[in-house]
Length: 159
Image (tube, rainbow, N blue to C red; front, side, top):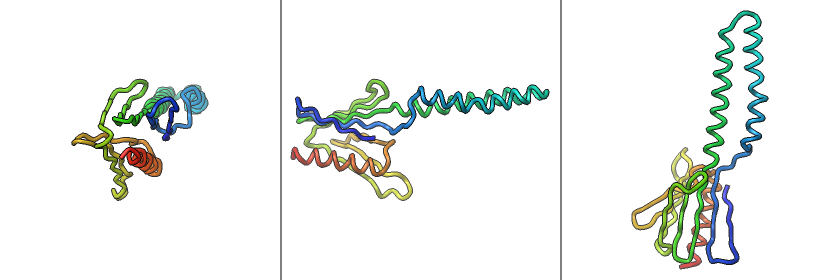
């Protein structure tokens, strides 16, 4: 999901790029509780009939399901902020706080969208002076193309 933020006070243009996730963590926990009832009840039913080894495997299944949902939620918190100032293009990425920061001079920035990769998804890279950063790896091809066009248009207005 690409969200463009225009501030009226400054000349900066900001894009916030994050994965599209339909469930929040509280909603995911509710669904996990509902889904966990099935293996838990079957494990308890087998325990009632004298087959106790099914219950630990049902517990393992529930634990793996919770771990998978948590991992998907954790990766969904990834965020990239692209800030275009009159002098620089700044890319920050991280989960809750920026872990990485890339700064490029606006006049020398080149936006590369590689769409001819066969069955692989397209790739979007921002580069300047031999340094490059990949942007929007979690976006769809259409969203990546729209972001590339928006960046190219915004950079072209200043040249």
